[in-house]
Image (cartoon, rainbow, N blue to C red; front, side, top):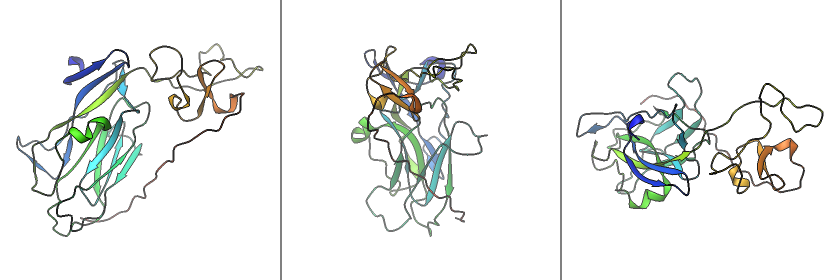
Length: 242
């Protein structure tokens, strides 16, 4: 992964994934090397994106709203994670977590203080994308002991795939794309070939078609199935002072 300056931990040819050492982003912390920010990863120009199946976005600390977007210039975040209110957390870890979108290839993290810490020792906060399969084996992330962190990276998994975006312009049959190459079908982004494996392989707005082993726009699916949709979480943005 030298082209994007990432340490490679593991490769699965069968699954089409690569596990890398992903940098942690810190806020109001003193690391041993004096650095306070993680490296913002940009996968543009590579055949990789962050795996939505294995990764989660996590923030450790309390009293802040952590968000991330595709770039620092984006007006609205794509995900948010609200940390719990700072209190007497003497020994336990305090964190929040959310999922990552299916087309994530670049990440810019931001953190806003929502609940004043009242001089709590939990002033050191962090945020990162991590493969949930490695959480139990990681060194405990605890910002209570002091405000100097030694953990700099966590494992995250990249999927070998290219996300597809576009709008459909249907002709009378309702199932073909026009000559401008605006596609109507969407193949699975987490598949090694051109077929889908299940309903969970399809992104939002698409349903799995048993007939053609494809993800088709929801309004074109011609078979009856009960779709299990994940609940979306929306966090209110509260303006406050810290």
